[in-house]
Image (cartoon, rainbow, N blue to C red; front, side, top):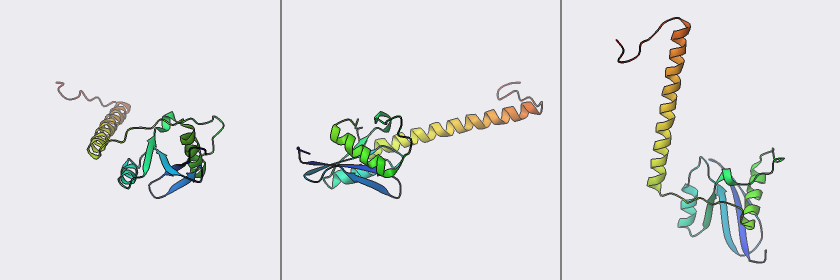
Length: 138
């Protein structure tokens, strides 16, 4: 690459990561897709002076014929898209903001679980011709 920047794509998982280096010399730019591993890796890398971006997986181009997903292919694709400037990077939230977002997501998941459980119980009672008037009904 004429600009002398080394682009690195990471396919990050909880226990292992796959790395693809796009060229051979110069400054290092790295990127990985946002996912369930959170932003801890990006924060640690930045604390060490490594430029590590996080891209939005939903805004990353994927060819329609690319149905076989492998870590190696994903890492290479990320490095190439980074070199081409075709990735949408996301802002890395503070630890407190990420914790708040996790709490909000957890609360919403619990609310949906409760709604599904109520629905299941209601259908179960209806199949047995048992009618519940509900709270507040007399």
